[in-house]
Image (cartoon, rainbow, N blue to C red; front, side, top):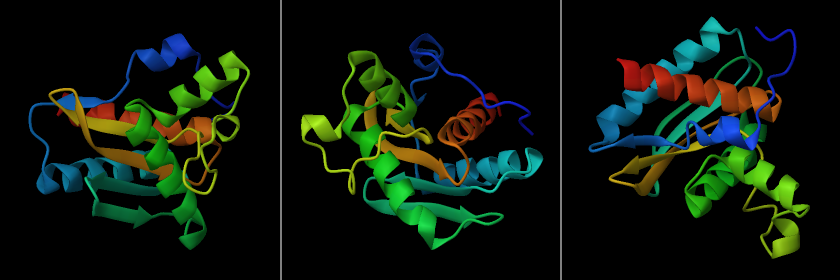
Length: 155
């Protein structure tokens, strides 16, 4: 799909900071997951995708070469998107701009992974969950998650 890796600036990432809606339940999570699988297949990627609401896993699929090795990345990226209430790649870019890392600020890398791929799901501005992808370079993970959100919102 990608001849060159996408490049995302902070300004680019601020255009889509989350999936904002007034209602999002398990059924919506499964629909978003199915849409995400469609993106992964359309783009011929090796990605794992998960949708989490609160502490509940609502949807999970491993496509291509993904598997249990992606689990810590999915969880870590989602933890960043949840903690900062913005995409994990945006958090990474802000850290890069500031010349620091989450680890230098006291965040444990095993729990918080500031790499692209996770986008918060918000109801009335409050983070209630995440869509997260892992398996490709993190900018591709982010691009696929963002495309799934766009397709979900456009339906």
